[in-house]
Image (cartoon, rainbow, N blue to C red; front, side, top):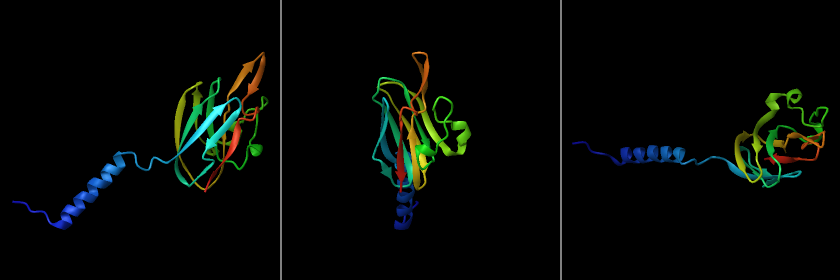
Length: 149
């Protein structure tokens, strides 16, 4: 007959607890709701602790938007193309940390990132043709700073 000792029992409980925590999604990251609309990007909260962050892009506007997270101190230092849109290619892929595209009006999409302390820019980089002219959501002011402490 097999007997358990308190030490073995405690070890089994610890292992099972760690497996349970890993499976329940604990540590998914600090939630940040980002309201998108014409032409605003409003995160709540506006700063978080370093580590896992889960952004929820909540399109409350009437147009399709996107959420792009960029490693930059301000939108003023970001390069733009001839239409005034953020030029992702010339800025470098390593500095574009992630994005959710085509967030339709009334929809939400999530983006989870592991962020180090610093300042980031949250932006919408959609361009569209409006009355024969190209309109850039970034050029219309759809960007904001976001701090990670």
